[in-house]
Image (tube, rainbow, N blue to C red):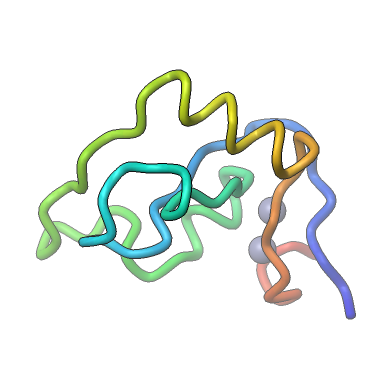
Length: 76
Ligand SMILES: [Zn+2]
Ligand SMILES: [Zn+2]
């Protein structure tokens, strides 16, 4: 299975738009994969609660500082 291995331009994505802003709802994605998520930049969705710096740091650490996308279609 291919997965994205980018380690730069990482952003912390909300898994669920209404899932809150704690670590359970955080997923590390590079910008390219983040843009590819359907909710990104969709003006019909109101923006979810932003993650705190602490949560972002914890999410990046958990992900080993790389994109966690496993779709394999947006990462090529
Ligand atoms: Zn990626
Ligand atoms: Zn991807």
